[in-house]
View 1: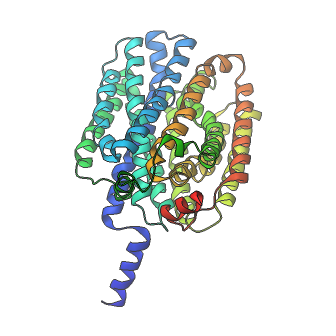
View 2: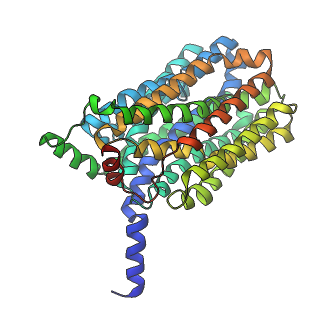
View 3: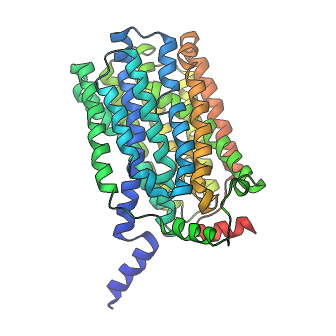
Length: 427
C-alpha cells in the first residue's frame, strides 16, 4: 500500500467512507424537507391572507399547527418511539410518502381548511423523520467526524429554504400559482427520496444494541430513559433549544409576513432577504461548525454563536424596521445561527442518550420544543399587531437565556464515540 493510499484510508476512517456520506445526505434530506416546508408556508402566508381574507387568529392557528410547531412535535414523539422499538429504517423509508400526501393538500388548497389539513399532515411526517434521520447520522458517523456529518444535515436544513426562496423570487409574478409550484417541487423531492432511501441499511449500532437487549444483557426501557441523568439531559436540551426555537420558529415562519405587513416590503424583497440569511448560515456551518465541533471546546463555540445572535436580534428591536436594518439583522443572526443552537441540538441530542432510547429522547425533546413553539406562535400575530418592537425584545430575551444555558451546561464530547459516551454516562 502506498503512502498516498494509506493517507486516504486514514482520512476515510476519520471522516467517513463514501457510503457513510451518502447515507448522511439521504438521512439529512429530512432537514431539507422540514425547513423547506416551513419557509414555503411562510412565503405563501401573506398571499393566502390576501386571497382568503385570513384573520390574525387563523394565521396564528396555521403557525401553531404547521411543520414548524405542534404537528411536527406530535410526529417526533410518536416517530421517535417507533424508531427505537422497530428500527430507524422502518420510519425513514416510508414517512416521506405520508409527507407527499400532506403536501398535495397544499398544492391544491382552495380554502383555509385545506391549508390547515395540509399543514397538520406535513408536520406529522416531518416530525417523525427527524429522530430517525438524526439518530442514523450520529450512529453511522466516525467518532471524530460526528459533528462534521451532523453539519451536513444542517447545511441541508438551510439549503431547503434557499431553493424555496429562489423559486419564490422567480415565481412571485404568478402569485398563488407560484406558491403551488413550490409545494409541488417538495412533493417530487419526497417521492424521489423515498425511492433512494429504500436502498439504505439499518443502523448497525441499533441492531447490536437490540440484539444485546433481546439476549437479556441490557435494558432499553422507559425506566432507563427517565433516570436522573437522562432527565437532566432532556431538561437541558429543552431549555437551551426550546428558548432558541421560540426565536427561530417565529423568524422562519413569520419573517416574510412581518416584512410585508409591518415593514411594507414587497414579496420579492422579503424572500430575497431571507435567501441571503440562509446562504450565510450554510457558510457558517461549513467553515465553523463542521471544521471545529469535533476538535475544540464546544461550550466556547456555542457561547460565541449565542452572543452574535443576541446582538443581531437587539438591532431589530432597537431600530425601525427598514430594509438596511433587516439586512444587518439577517447577516448577524445567520452567522451565529449557523454554528449555534440548532446545530448543537442535533449533535448533543444524539450523544446524550443510550442507543435504545436515543430516538425516543430526541422525539420527546423535539416534541416539547415544537409544541411550545406552536402555542407561542398562536399569539405572535396579535403581539405583532400591538407592537412589533415589544415582540422583538421578548425574542432578545429568549436568545440570551438560551445562550446562557448552553454555555454553562454544554457537554464536552468532541472526539469520543457514542459507545464511549454511553459507557461514561452509565458509570
